Image 1 (cartoon, one colour):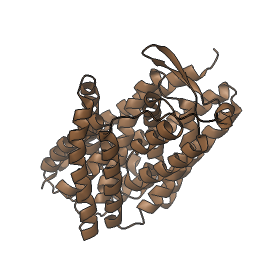
Image 2 (spheres, chains in turn green, purple; image 1 turned 90 degrees about the horizontal axis):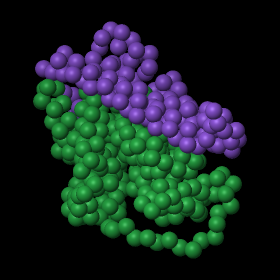
Image 3 (cartoon, chains in turn brown, green; image 1 turned 135 degrees about the vertical axis):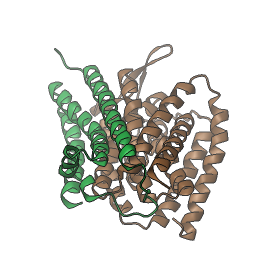
Length: 278
Length: 126
């Protein structure tokens, strides 16, 4: 295939992945990598490098709006970024030393979990917890503009959230994904933040987390301009369009539908990894 | 002017939007130029050989941009994108310092140190 044929195909594929990632809430990075490797035969390492830079673009774009609207809690974000950036360095180190077949299997497992999570309706599982002194010391408690005026919220289990964020950082660096779904679990479930604030703060953190490992991948030659260019432009455009359409779409129906597609892709990643084809 | 969390948020939002827009435009421009100058060649992405060594470091990328090399222009855009969140953290650090919030100056410095370490270490050791 010539470059003049290859680039438009990758551009369209990445657009679709960004669109799908934004509609399902999975994120473009976690969808584009398996599609590039499975359907276009791109080496997994190039796909990871390209996906990582696209993740920085989409999350920073989304975060700019969330931060402006005061939905992201920048204090919680900054504090937890200590955990995610250290994790991302560990993940990038592991990622550049582990065979691609194993990476492919890990990728598939994470993708399955994310698909399952996105297809299930959000359950409010607030528990009565003792206040966390760490949240008070760091002034993490905040408020956001809800439909009926400002809503104040408390932050709980800061240490547990911090540990989960370290794990999210490792996965982000290892697989070149934003690991937004794990970040949302850490904030929404463990730290009991409002769902909206969790999503907005997760987007705020993804760019910094990805930048930590992207520096490593750039210097190792994983970020190849010929492929990272169409992937970044395609995923960014696709997720912008997806976000526009998201308001007013029957979200849960779409998510269930796409979760099946993503689930099949995930199993294919695991299978190809076991067979040693990736 | 009194610095509050709100003014940090506004600054951060502007940095992020500008960074993504500028890098996107550089990548788009470099990409079109790449298609024009290399469109007929065959793509080599099925086998991992790593990006050209000059596409991996800042001096190499800048050198290539001056030589009007299309792939270097794309890399300059991608590097701008990687630097955007790092710049965002640096701006937050200034904000927290002006707010005289010592705890968050320390927290933000740690994050910035990790990011700079990763960038510099990668550049020096590949």
